Image (tube, rainbow, N blue to C red):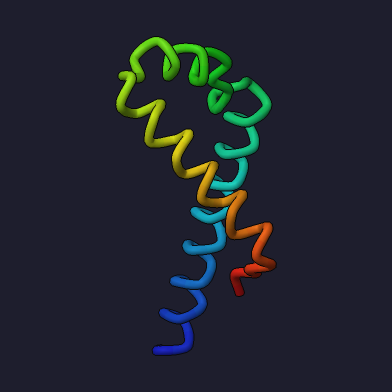
Length: 72
């Protein structure tokens, strides 16, 4: 009797997993995850302080590259 329960649980989980994969593939195909304006809108709402922080971070990265730093 317990092997029947395991087989039923395995069958249901495979069935539900296949439904999830099909739904994911459908969503990708239909463009549900495409956000073409994401970066354009992000620039509109950035403050001057955010932009300065990003520029300082890039400068720090460049200094580390010149020193030969390699993150693991």
